[in-house]
Length: 157
Image 1 (cartoon, rainbow, N blue to C red):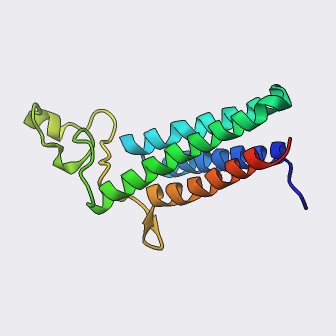
Image 2 (image 1 turned 120 degrees about the vertical axis):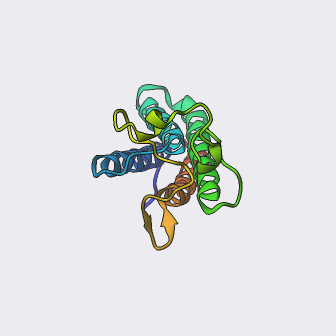
């Protein structure tokens, strides 16, 4: 079976939709996202929009859209690699969401307060499968999506 550009773009956009949907399912199941998890969601949303644009815009724009989709998937994949490195202690993460960020400016009352959203640290793994965290799985799946987007860009219109 030969897949045309538009079909490949749809597959890649659906892949991002599934990954984004999976993130929301995990959140619903009680795994709130950290700040870096949220960063990884935005490029998936962009890839979905790009995939939908392929159905509304002329065929002449599809190669450029496929390359934009590849860029969005590469960005979320890169963020996933960065997040994985922070989780594994390979490099320092943002001080705003890691345990090394310190407690400057917080009072005892702030620390003991149960009011407000739960703070999720970016350097703590809340769930893993086969030794890989959600950020790692996002990176792997996103790089597969990059390949599909590039395959779409290389296909004839």
